[in-house]
Length: 66
Image (cartoon, rainbow, N blue to C red; front, top):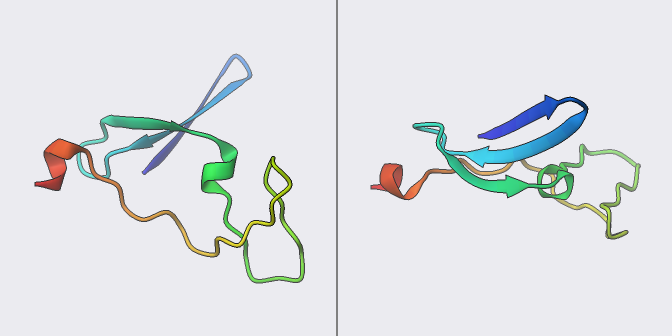
């Protein structure tokens, strides 16, 4: 799962285990961009065209993978 925290105007995006909710890693907006089917051209912060059209797969920590 993805967790978005905004504290005092500072945004923090983290990836969390879908089972237990423990922290896995920090993410950026580029990591979670998803393009809906449309004629728009969406680009990430590097100027690359975003072609990801599906949500991120489920994520599990090492403890919950087993």
